[in-house]
Image (cartoon, rainbow, N blue to C red; front, top):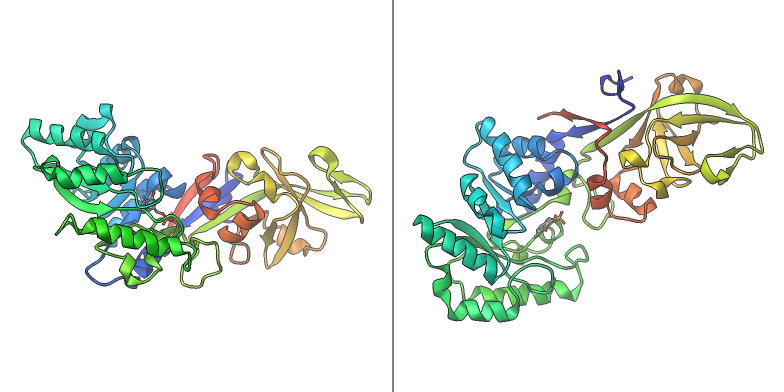
Length: 373
Ligand SMILES: *Cc1c(COP(=O)(O)O)cnc(C)c1O
């Protein structure tokens, strides 16, 4: 039994920080040397632990980090300061809300300004302090979610003084369908972005998420903003050998039992056994982030063999048919839920969702262990 599932823990996530670094370097290698590769560590580093991920990437030379909101930013800032990484840039995608101005300044957080209201707030803040505060300007090129809309951009172009005294680090936008490489929306957004960019001469630009980083260099500009690829999943959930697997998820066999042909397994009795069977009950369930849709679809690794998850996924357990598994392998007392044959993307497919959601819904109950930092 691995050290990490010993003791009081029934399921544990092993997070390979070395693999995250390798994936960051791979994405970085796709763009030219003048393009900075930032790291997206929002939602607690896609569920894997923003502090550990950011610290490892900082040690590897990453200097720019994005989170969603100020709370995430402050938690990360305090950790990185403690670890002696004081010069890193932390940016909030949601920008500065009315009640977050002072803390953005106090914790040296750079807001992404998403509309004129945020711009005027941050501008006023900068004037009151007679300090040139850093910011990113987010313009919307088709997402209709965040960012200055066309009217606001027009206004800004005619009222450039609204930016006076601010240190505008990047003009950014976000791609709608970058994971579909031949989607015409990509080229349209790129063209729109380049048109607006002409009005902000000299301002560095940023457009690409993970999938955008894998498109042509036209999409890279001065900074890319990969998230999911760092965590080892292809943005389109395609098989890839370019990205290293980051997460291993192991869980304890909490009981082995013999069942008869004709027995039903689990809630609703949805699985009928057609032969005398051996069932392993595993200590992981939907409360841990093991998706309910995986019941009857997923498989787990036991030693060198795989075994199917049968019946419904419960809150704290799942049932696996281990009739065909060599009893010697069962003696180890644990199974692997995510492994080379059954990676995040396959799990996402079976759960009818995307790898992003599998990761960010990992519960707090599984312990997290970090390797190779
Ligand atoms: C989340 C996010 C990213 C990263 O996206 P991935 O698909 O995970 O690479 C980049 N930019 C913005 C604005 C985002 O919200």
